[in-house]
Length: 514
Image (cartoon, rainbow, N blue to C red):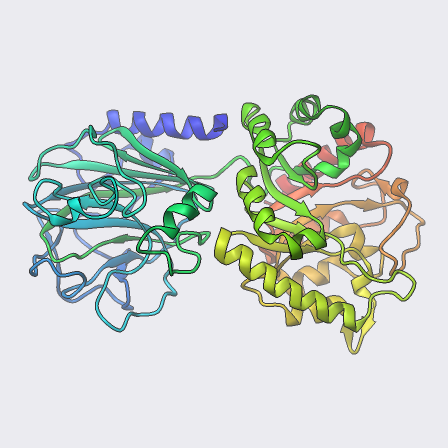
């Protein structure tokens, strides 16, 4: 685990130890400073609604003495008021909830709950990953599942909490904490970590395959979702419900780099090249190659340095024919995106409608599998040839129009949009939320482009010294797109001199417009 996540977890423990138990449903000055927000103020439920309703349930939930209570209704699941979910959705977060169970009670705190899920025909709880709340001594659920994975603190029906967990008796208050950073999730109880797991990993998917969720496509893999408190028909009290969004170091305003930029260096010495990149102040890499390492080995080298891989570039044939392997490697690396940068086609004939049609079919199929089975976002990286004219637009327009936005997104390469004559700013404004990633590159002045998808590598120049209006493209991306990471790519023979210049330039632009 990298140093950034470790610092978050240490802070989580200190937050619990320093909690003022007399200040219910309030935030301290330090908590406010650190970004904590109350989800319940002890008086109102304005930040919640029914899981399958537009408003808060009219019955089944009650506020009394600053506590939020699930009213008893015979122990049936969601037959009275039903579950409640936060109106806001969360991605990377730390959640803290005080709870008190009545004798024999069952409830749960769910997270990454998809608010778009269909209302079930028969009453049941909404689907999501669950921190189980249960009277382990009396409730029959404690004896169900496998190895105690339905007991208090467990990832319900998947991972059991340890038997020696620090739980206070029924009728007394306990504090549950859930920390989610990227795919990494932890359950804490009363200041002690119970379990940790990686969403979408092979181990996680194997657990799901052996659980009650085995037939639910993509269970637990959405990028962001609501927090849920469960109505299971038993009296349960809640207070001090608070959450903070976690801003990771790999946010959009921190420049990243593509491994291809340092391909020659990586081929010689992977650890030394990572050290060099980190020395530049870059900790976020899009890998396009494993450079002779396994995904596990490369992830270990990154973790040791506090670095991350956020996107994994693969070939078109691997994407189409080895999608499971691609998904497994991507999850092992810790990335959220899979990228393809070249569609095979006859370079003499150019990119054709037949090529575009096959591309659409393959992208929709592979992107769907990566999303539903691994929780990954697939991005196609433009490379120039797809901007050749077709009907009233281009083949890029055809691909964007005919691929499913739920499964196919894009990585905008500035040079390979500008080189064939496209305007990056107009592209961003036209297809804003389809763009998730960007390759930031500049083209040497005087170079005339075409639809070949190729140019001399030394036509890549330091950012801000070439033909492309980088500043306005970044500004448009920050204002009108869903681009999360900005990767410097330099294919030239002068990366040691050009990348530091590009890094300084990109930092100044991101800082100016963020």
